[in-house]
Image (cartoon, rainbow, N blue to C red; front, side, top):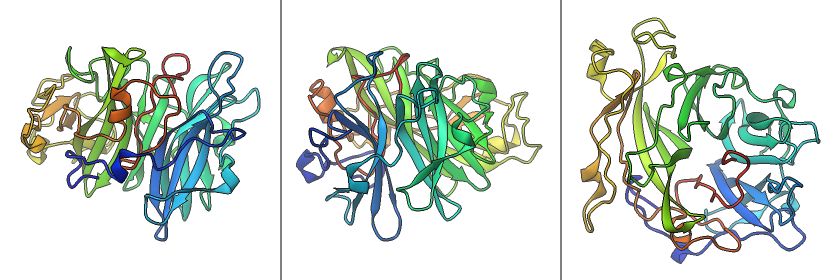
Length: 364
């Protein structure tokens, strides 16, 4: 748990709160990527499960399951332990993997964006709806959302800001891309289609891959916890993954939506300084000026090491590029791969999956 989203303390003595399923279950190999909401009565946790059986391509089957809890510590599988969103038919975009769900409350029910993979479609993002969080129906006739560029997309994170959805997702550049949508199906790219958060400087904890974001919206501030990958000799294959944090302030701009310094955007823009609205194009375009801190000194307050405001093509980010302390799954990853990844408790509700069972190109 954390008082500020930067300093974290493991609870439950660092033990998993949910283990992989029994031998005959469809989540007996791995469980990962939880997404947690509270519906006013209890916690709902959608998570990705993988059985020991694999597709003929060697890629693992991923399905989406649900567990419930009254206190966030003691969890019980719902729906009889069966998937609440199973894989689709052989010719569908999610014939092999339906994974890493991003769920929000929407229109009196729930809406989910998830990573889909099949040999015919590669990595895409699909969407589904539910009234109760258990029975889901695929939206958009089961087809991927449109407008994402690159369309090769996985690891979606979605939140709602006023009348728009905001999505961050992983793409071909091993970075985070951004998009906005009015209906959650047709998306418009932010930052002229360039990544909104790239890899860190060489030697930083996120110098190889930045992705698998988790979003929270606090007033007009978007907080983005994300997974940073770095190759290390004692890593898992040979990666080590840690969690970083970036922040952005969302403002309505006083000019026509869709135009910002020559870049196609939307009315909701990532802005870290209100004063910058006076001249939103004053700083160098296309460059991020984040102060990266590779490792916080022992016994220091991480809040003192927040970086300077940086700009990326009209989008201003601030946040720590040092790993947030005592991250959700850092202990397991620091020790290398385990036989059965499990879910442990933290306020961050979407820790990154390990790269043991990635689809082509590093999904889901």
